[in-house]
Length: 142
Image (cartoon, rainbow, N blue to C red; front, side, top):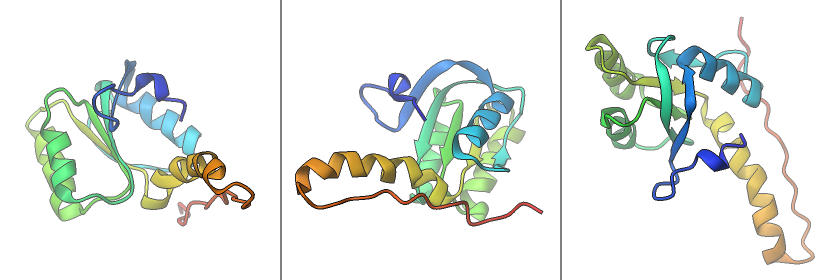
């Protein structure tokens, strides 16, 4: 994603970036991840600066903690429970809290980490070929 310069020095899951609207962030993510659609809860005009990224499928408590943090504008996750995290986010937005939730999909949220793992692991296993094989999005948008 080339967001290394945005990463918080104390918390690797938090990113601070220049202001964009939620709509602009969604379009950026769709381009970077080559995804046709994202599931989103939030106001598309909301200004986003501080983002929590929760890859894969972490526990609801991590999503709720991030969504409850007044310093976080948006939470990007791999997947979450609709009846827990989704409802919590919808309630927050309905109370005019300035937070949004974006679901990338489990596999798509881990793609860059798996690609990075090849470069990280290769020197540790000298002589063993290691390859990254991209996983296409599982879903089609109809």
